Amino acid sequence: MLIMESTGPVVVETVIKKSRFIATVVGVSSPEEFADFHAEIVAGAPGARHVCWAYTLGSGPQLVARSSDDGEPGGTAGPPILAALQSREVANAAITVVRYFGGVKLGAGGLIRAYGGSANAVLDATPLRAAIATAVLTIEAPLDDAGRLEGALHALGTVRAVDYAPSGVCFVLEVPADDEALVGDRVLSLTSGAATVVDVAHRLA
Image (tube, rainbow, N blue to C red; front, side):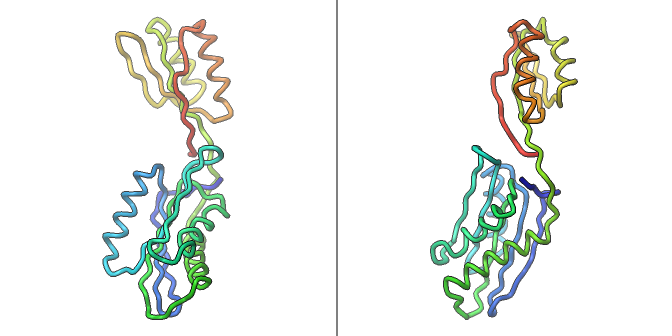
């Protein structure tokens, strides 16, 4: 999988038979983040005929892919944009293509080529890099084990948060996805089973 080197945005404009197609790609990490980006694009294009889009989040079984034709004939805008992302295996990214109608109808085939071409053009202009799959583990432990466990966790990965409470301590640890099972075993071994991994989330970094 590939992700953007920075969150963007990158913008490329194409003119096809007098219609303007303005493609924008940004990095996104959630549907809510995409919704904010989409709202900004719509607000900035009051005279546009269509604002079509697609995004992909995550990978493998957790892959989320969505698209919209926004009033264009079914399957002629959103799916070609999504196909551009998926054919290059780009994750955690969203593309909008704003169309300003130029008075010449393109037909279904022309629209598919225009939207897909716009999406590919903006990806051509976007620096991409290989994604690193990570696991974010939430670990709960008794207070008596906190000091010993925290030192070990810092050696295993990146400790994102530590939350002490009277009932115990909660660690949030990020490690390469391949090390997820190793961390679970290590936590159990260090605390004789008193500490446990209570939640695991996966992301691309």
